[in-house]
Amino acid sequence: MREEIKKIKEESLTLIQSGLTRDELQELKVKVMGKKGSLTALLKQLGSLSSEERPLVGQIINEVRASLEQAWDEKMKELEEQALLKRLEEEFLDITLPGIMMPRGHQHPLTKVIEEIEDIFIGMGFQIAEGPEIETDYYNFEALNLPKDHPARDMQDTFFITEEILLRTQTSPVQIRTMEKLCPGLPVKIIAPGKVFRNDDDATHSPMFHQVEGLLVDRGVRMSDLKGILLTFSRQMFGEDRQIRLRPSFFPFTEPSAEVDVSCMLCGGKGCKLCKGTGWIEILGAGMVHPKVLEAGGYDSVQVTGFAFGMGVERIAMLKYGIEDMRLLFDNDLRFLAQF
Ligand code: 2NL
Image (cartoon, rainbow, N blue to C red; front, side, top):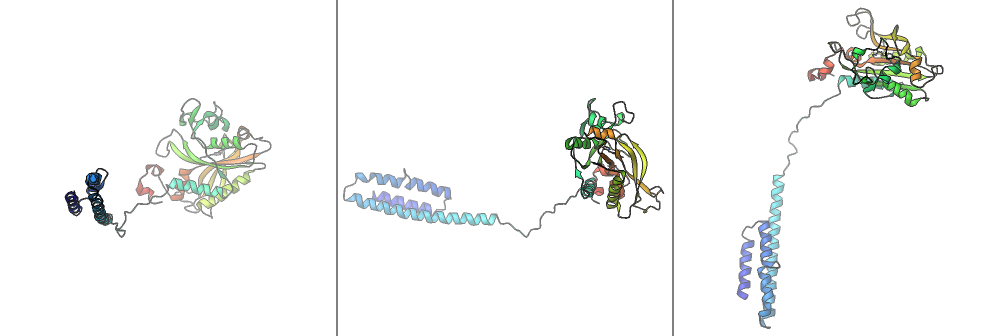
């Protein structure tokens, strides 16, 4: 048995030093010192020895076991250190390498103009209202004093989904919905920006465009309030030197109604190509809310009055940035967009 112990010891020590991998080293330990290992098997055979031999051989086995374990531990530690060094080498990160440039985008000019309009009206105490782009005939027409047989309904210009459901042609339905929601609360002081849809697609029109409408309903609201708000807006949008003028007009949802001109931002009013020599440029439509529209919102048109206005965002953007063709705003050509 002493011979066998010696053989196991020498073979094991040789193997431990023979350049095994960590897995192979682990396997070796199990084979020799595990439950069914060769050294463990010898320990079980001690019973067959004489009572003088038994403690001596037992001690030898334990000493061999201890020295094998020590050799094994040292080798394992060495292999683990090597593995760590290798990983550190492989995973070396050169933080001085130049990065990859991410081109930076920016907002679309229409989005910028919408947010600028919003900021101006928020500064005057208005709130932003939003609503569905798919509307009912009632909110888009009926409630705005455009009954079914009214000639001012542009049937050909409206995208109908069914007889009663359509794509909104203005953002006014948002304002009707807001009045319904707030009534009898006062004031209603909102602007409604958003997409609107009309079925007239040619060089100067797009089937989808953007509108901002405004509404102020309260006791004692007058046309002069409308004029003051619109003058403040025009000056913040187009320059502090601007003047505005109101010309009589007609909308079914306002009475009286007006078209609003701003003094030309290009020539200052002297007359140029942009203003066609008149010194004035039309920027929006407005008026005092028709009593029937106030009633549709739930308000008593004897007790309260209101003004409303509507402007096309594309037109405002073109005037503000000197864009001559509206299609540029929809083409998404980066050579154009990168200029804003
Ligand atoms: C234009 C003219 C306008 C309105 C929109 C409105 C909304 C309600 C009640 C009364 Cl809820 N009026 N909106 C009023 C006047 C003109 O738009 O040329 N838009 C591009």
